[in-house]
Length: 89
Image (cartoon, rainbow, N blue to C red; front, side, top):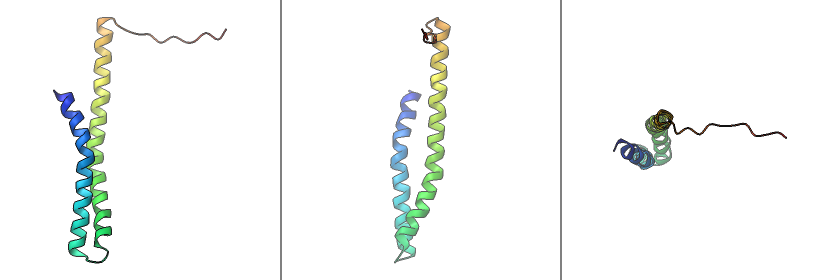
């Protein structure tokens, strides 16, 4: 269940970023009529980078931890594929 929620959050993260950038553009247009959309979009992009970047980093950490946990379960069951060096002959 938590894996599905993390995958859904990762997908929604893109849309959240677009909403933040769009809201910044609308906010900029309301306060600065001529160049407000560009300024607001830049501010929105900065805010989206911080907020959604942090979410993306947390999702990436969770995926790495999931990979480690799955590998540990395989090793405990004895289903390990060992890596071997190729022959140079």
